[in-house]
Length: 107
Picture (spheres, helix red, strand yellow):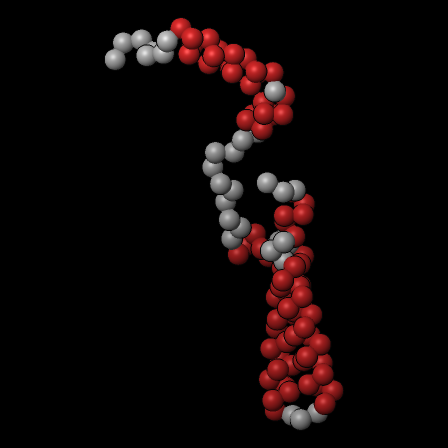
């Protein structure tokens, strides 16, 4: 196939569209900062560097210990401590994935 295959009118229209796109500063910035490759997912070692992830791991271990202790004993204080720790663990776990989105803005 020789040539562009466009008529003179289509080439002028295309040139006008390209000129308008070059003048659009917002579009130019978006195209300049466009990432073609997705960000790598954090591995276990990366998660351990985050304080909230460490807090979640600590709370999960304490919750598991209190769960075992509350099944062995029937003390109300141990059961209440387990419930409180488990709820706190759930709150931290739910907020953990969203912490990076607030920092980086929306896409």
